[in-house]
Image 1 (tube, each protein chain N blue to C red):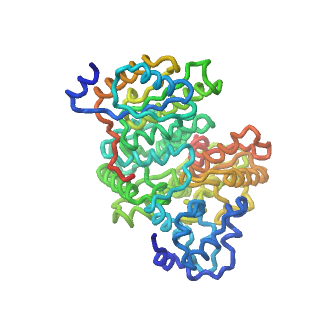
Image 2: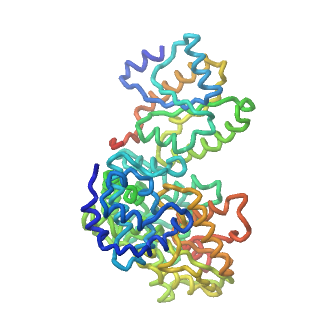
Image 3: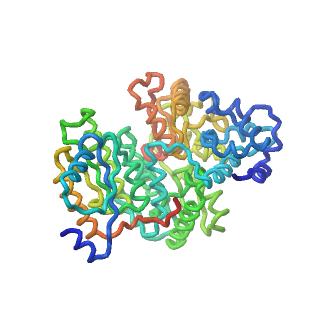
Length: 147
Length: 380
């Protein structure tokens, strides 16, 4: 359903999804195993932990033309590295402030906790996020590409 | 791959006497061991360009200019490094980005023409700024540093607020640009000239549009870039540029600034861009000595001998950088000063970062403050 709407608009957002190795990446895998149909307009980057996703990574994604960035990790208390996702929250808040300074809509950035069993939820969140970003339109940051 | 012969000629590399003074004064080789400016020059003269351009060492230099000052045969080593980095960058090489590459991305994002920043939120109502006028204050990256380095206790926007307070004290209401971009200093020194050119053109156009005649800087890097590099790449600027310390030194001479006494011993860290690159050593000192009660205690290595703060252009921050920073902090503490005054927001951030280490010894614990913040504090 969501996909059809996007096609009408003629704009397919580019979404970068950082997924942690232990929960969210497995969750995305689970979505595939369960053959859940959801929007294809995202690229997954696997990191060992959501706490690894530094502000620099997110800004780099925007610099290279991402329209939205999703950071996802284990639920609180489930982190493979005990408090990696708490670190992720700190870093995410910092990034959010920088994104605000740059004049970018805060909705283009999202932090979610998705466990390895929540394949359906992964699909739902991606659909939701793709819809939201489609409504916002292309990122204004897409620079004249040099690199 | 690229040929550096032209660059080597231009920067007087063939004048090298192999005396090794550059290496003996280089802060990196003092603490880092491996790196040697002299060896880099020798390798270039011998023509090992292919090898040199992919070497990590080319990104190690701090471009602090210490070797230039000491070289008896006028070799412009920092300029050589910069030009070689352009060549190296063309072949896809880059330095190791610190902080996960956030500032590299930030500066490149700044080149985007549709960018509409929200960078003016800090200018609260008690700070008087005007829409148009003769004076423009170029804030630089301070709003971004303020967010990014909040966890090591850096409040870099205090510098910007202080500058406006000082200017208001003098009866000046400066213009601020809501859409100013990074000056491109870091891109300039890491060889990305295409993006540098874009930023330079944008900033100069914005300033010209504002109609300001004088642009004031609190950041030595922005100042250097505007003063020396922009005219080369975008032609005549059409407005004057001046650093806050120079501007205020002129004002204190006329007793235009009224200070109350601050009982403190301070020592001053010369930023490499302001000091060795532009030769501005006295104005900050004139300003400091005009504040009653303040005693200026010089570190053994000051002015053109001042040691760099350890990292530049947000690249290659490593153990060597930390050693340089700790060494400098130790030397500041040994002067017996209560306060280390920095003239550059980056020196301030780097020293704060070195101190934020939990294992940092008491011998490096010294309060750090920016020149603008201290001046604003002393105003009546």
